[in-house]
Image (tube, rainbow, N blue to C red; front, side, top):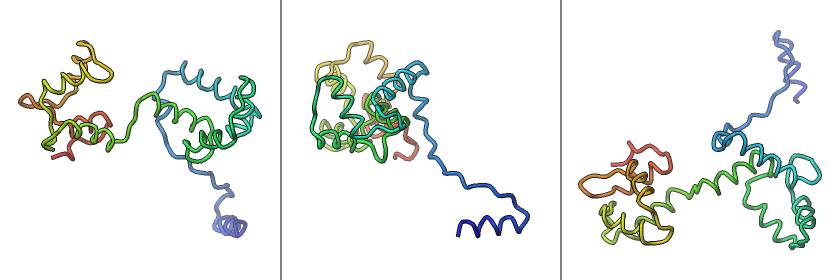
Length: 177
């Protein structure tokens, strides 16, 4: 059948040109400086024990064995389930990008803000939010507060956390009422 399409294309005066697989465009390489991408590539190559361009269960098993570890096959399979599809270098880099750049889903971030919004009004008082950042969890210092406030949608002493979540995720803030 594929030969028929090439034949018809030739009959119409077209040239025989093999179809190319389309790749999804990704800006994962823009997430890291070039030297860090090179370090990830070296790490990937060390893990890819059989040098086929993909990390699979056997590669992980061999890598762990070189470190004196012997995880179960199910543990290794579970690690690979974090990646959708085969684990090539782009998927490897994407996975690290997501982990290192704290890309929680928008809904997760929104739910975290809602936990502190007892009246469910879509905003937090500025001083309350500042107090949370400086005294709860990973505590911010004054410099980090100042940096955060540069991007904060602040109106009348209130932080619109719906807009702030959109800013954090790079979503369109114009869609927010």
